[in-house]
Image 1: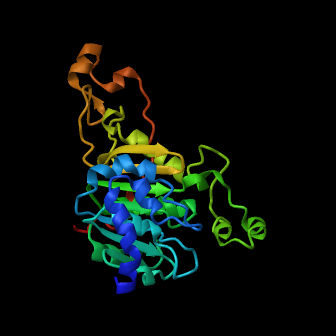
Image 2: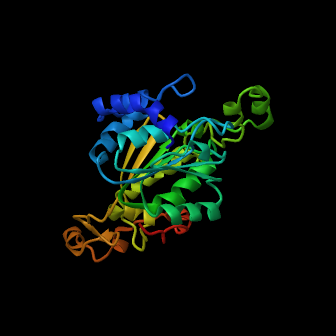
Image 3: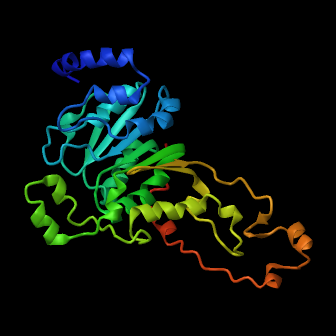
Length: 301
């Protein structure tokens, strides 16, 4: 940070010192017309407060400011101020490196470029918090979660913002014609959402499906192989336009099920020798997403 930047930031640093524990108030220090506030600060508060003084590595995908390379970065500065001992990283498809300062490192590239992201993660190492708000397209949200969640450390947090695009179908050129004067609206031309609330192609349905995985040890389905996400997601928190996912060891065991079949004492209580005697039909469970999670699992802290 140069001298001019230091002088400009000093009043904010003083106010942040006086109210360091309220993320919404810290975000308000950087508010202006184009960036009124960190929208989800009040939601993040309870999740981030226990981590405030830790030495973390935090990645925000999407720096803000759209096509102007000289503006944006308010969220990065908010997190830098709120987490005084942490390193803040940002990624944007527009070159925002002009906004770098002490404890803020920005990478210029596309979150869908695996080679670029591998270089990013090799430099950052495993992360503690990932906040994904880089693309409006559902397929990009989904791909980002499947590939980037494994890069989190144990106890890490993944936040997917602005998932309202799940509910908006792509209108292609028609939408583009409506949005000619707005860069933001242009970004929504091919969001790939759906009016069908159960459409598996939307990011919201991807997260809803993961909820069942929290209880994978209770699945009565012999031969079921738990996915990476079954074994490594310990909680999901749903808010308006925001999903927060915690990474951890999700192997707590079951009182009645072992290896997705009934334990012997349960079979004995029922008076049967095996599940086959109960005449149950077991459905196949789609686990294609697990293959996508292997890309960056070798990233070290």
